[in-house]
Length: 119
Image (cartoon, rainbow, N blue to C red; front, side, top):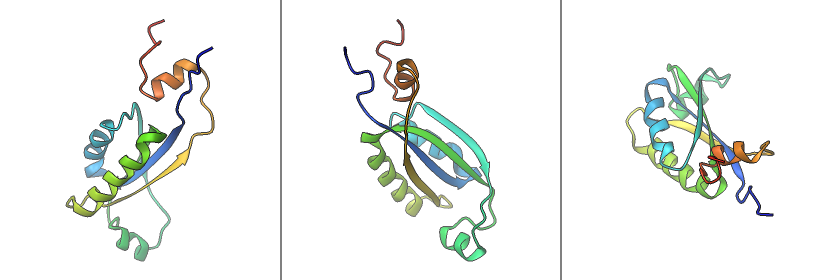
């Protein structure tokens, strides 16, 4: 029987200024991200930490993405570069391993693998 889970998935969380959320959503889609969820975000960091991260006096959005493990490093490098170079585009990004996905169809959707979905 063929393994339907050939690659591990990660949860990629990106926190950015609300005005830049659509920009980052569009960028991440180029890394085979097939599922994204946005939520307004408010942190508990001190003003000093927020200022260092460039997140002071903004309304932030958390973008939750499911990404293939093989694309995560590349996406993180792109985000790091964009956080440094995009005007008012600073943010925070980190990944967390995905523990389990229930069902091969859900896995195929989340991993952007269309093969077998039409069955």
